Amino acid sequence: MRRRNKIKNIDIRNITKEKTIIIKIEKRKNNMGDKFASIDLGTNSCRLLIVEKTAKGLKTIYNDSAHVRLGDKLAETRNITAEASYRTLNLLKEFSYKMKEFEVKDYRFIATAAMRMADNRYQFMQKVKDVTGLDIDLISPEEEARLTVMGAKPNIKKSSEYVVLYDIGGGSSEVILAEVKDDVKIIDMISIPFGSATSSQKLNLIDYNKDKYNNLINKTKTYLFSFEEKNNILELAKNHKVQFIAASSTAIRIAAFDKKLEVYKRIDGDNHKMDKKAVKSTIKNICKLSFEQRKNHALIGKARADIIISGCAIFEAIFDFFNAKEVTSCFKGAKEGIVEELSS
Image 1: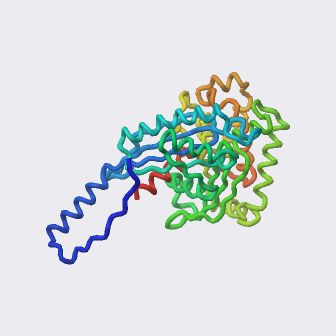
Image 2: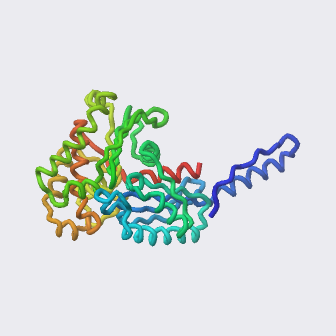
Image 3: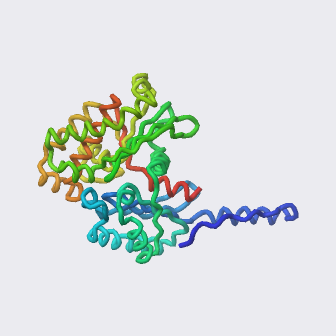
């Protein structure tokens, strides 16, 4: 595995036509088959994506994720715990081996909200480097938003004038406004310090409780007033100029419930459109489930049973605030944006 090398400039003025053709073929041949990887370490999950560059585009050859819960007890302690560190390091060792096995040419390893919040982040980052050899790129909310939009591009309709994309993470939630023209250009974004995992811990919102649930909705909306006033999104939405996209595990699971899937596969919940009635009824059905029912449910499971209610509250808060009529689910995000950029 090596970091990407820049192609040196070649003076072809004194090279024959035949040799010039050979150089072009060799460059194309060397580009094809190259493998690129992204690791996205969030508050709850850590994901690895490995792709191969082909003549038809990027082909996924390995995709894995695990619930390492890096942000466990982070809201209380402001530190990554020894247990969370142990879980994460074990997984990252596996990811490192897998990248070597596939002979990955270049990679980018990002960490987001949990790492930004942890007081012992730099000690943990050094430990990861010592144990796995992997370099962590601790990114800003703005960079996270940029990569998320890049990854979500396939779900953005070309007929849209604007897109509001919200990504409900474990430690924070980003809301992004972008203009859709020849390309997708971010106009503004906001990072809300509420995610499904940290809100569940802070507010003790594990099982549905009306007061706690509405409290999280109101807290989330508080951060959106200035964002709306600055960008006039409600007016744009009223004139049918905005496509709403929810890119998160919470959104994919809500979509999976609405589609009545029997087995949870992220790709099966991708690009699913839900109107207001579907959103409300699906969230209501999820909130009715007990902890044991959520833990044993094929579309939620043990790893998400204690954070899905908080995720639903944040999802509902953003959807309602902008008076959205429809939302499209999206499982693609920062990790897809990274490999797209690395391979270009």
